[in-house]
Length: 470
Image (cartoon, rainbow, N blue to C red):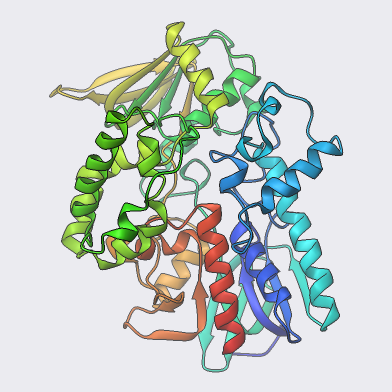
């Protein structure tokens, strides 16, 4: 690799300064030893990324404070921080704050402040033994890796060299990511989180939304905050809405007690049985479900490719709607809009986005059970299809270059990228890198659940220890 115009000196180069990259830096700063960490992030602030850059109070976490600690050694870390933050007057009074702090669903923007404070504290700890972290604003467009280290090329031509590199790119939100062969939807759509843009929509106009998961929930919240009062029609293949997240009582860890359950198929069968037992006892069915998450990485990694494909094809929509649940305030909004007849959910597949006609956005869909297409029109269109995990479809410079160079290969079922259990990236020839690593959403195919705060926190701690150990 050429050293011309290359800035050297980093021990660890982190690509992405959202939750994943920031929490890795926090863990590295806390470990003894002197090291220089460089985070390349295009946003002006670290710790926010795609998920926590939201500024509207209505865009909340979909988990309560007790479930969202960034400290894997202290499950009450966010609860403690949030209690102090509220006491200091940082969170405006709301109807939600009559419940215990641990049960609150804080706005994502406030959660971003929490992450930033933990980074600031880690910087102070790191300074005691000479460690530093530097934020370089920019977009990484290329990466090269060999036995001498890793070199990043930025959009402005700058080059950064480090001993180790980490892909902490976070989530590629479908609504904000150029994608090969599917850009027509985004070209015609309004950003789900752009409340300001929604202020310019006809407040009584019909809005069409593609996708019915948590991004759709955010989109409806955005529309409500922008003053929209017209009909909203949601189209998704299965027409399933996320269930509301409740606070069920504790339930025995049935997976921890029964090691004969080793496949996703066995998991689904056992989980149904446990939920039926809970309901028969008058206990919320979410109680057994909430014991499962810690075991998902093990079960997913043990499953065969065939079992994984069967799970994705037949179970995934129901798994997502039951497991990735809506925060109560947002769920109440959706319930109200459904009761008012303003929000309608349709089981239908998007076929194409038609050309705008007379100021109306037009789409072609096929309703479930129909053998013909139907054209629907509205004043606006929103892409709420969630996250694009297939890096082959992401039309951005870095994924394209990494694939073209053979430095990465798609992960299982083309979800994210391939890596060993410790996060070391596997290249196109199946070789495990000693210089390039990944964490968080890029490891979706490896662990299935690799996006939640607790997933990222655990990965950050483990990867930091591996990087330091060499």
